[in-house]
Length: 151
Image 1 (tube, rainbow, N blue to C red):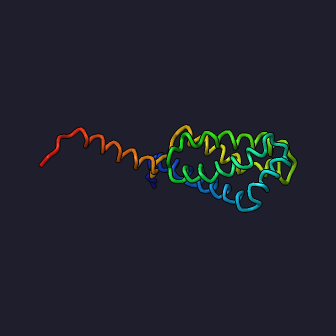
Image 2 (cartoon, rainbow, N blue to C red):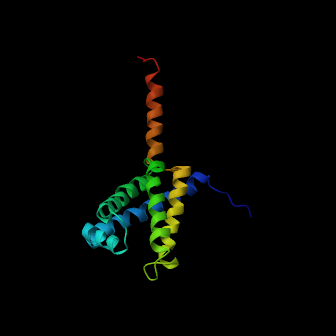
Image 3 (tube, rainbow, N blue to C red):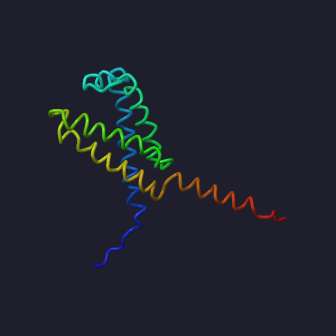
């Protein structure tokens, strides 16, 4: 039995959509759970420098950036801060900390999101991305602008 495969652009699309959804929801949860003050206090408790800055930046980045990744708009650039964020959360915050809020069990999801962010930054949005739709329309408009008008 021979299985047909989809183009690889669809594989990255699944990774992009799920990563965007997970990141966006995580950002919304940070806004809702304890608000920015509660998240900033949690960052202070783990000893993150500039916790007041990151307590606002990270939820904002996750909501806006997650939505952009989910829809497939500017994904390569948007993924870069997530590569940094999930490296820091995985290796600098969670890996050296004891369970239950640290260690392997705590950092598994961060590692998957780190891998997804690296993949998205390297490969791009894949198929079914708003970015592709807009670039197709832009190319068509440029091509049409160069043609003589017909009556």
